[in-house]
Amino acid sequence: DYDFNKIVGNLPYYISTDILEYILTNFKKIELAVFMTQKEFYDRITTKNKRDIGPINYLIDYCFNITKIL
Image (cartoon, rainbow, N blue to C red; front, side, top):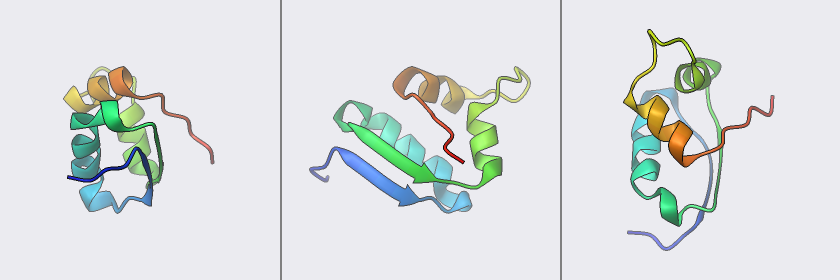
């Protein structure tokens, strides 16, 4: 267990979902999170296509405000 409230990182595609799931379980402690991800991962977690939406999409929408910078 760590004592922090800000996270910054470049998430490897193969573990991005696992890292986000960990953060989602502790989201009340997180004040700011800034990540660089592959475009495909960003597209997957921000999709509005009902066919592609999964539980993580709803959790992310509930817990965070996602902003694409580039």
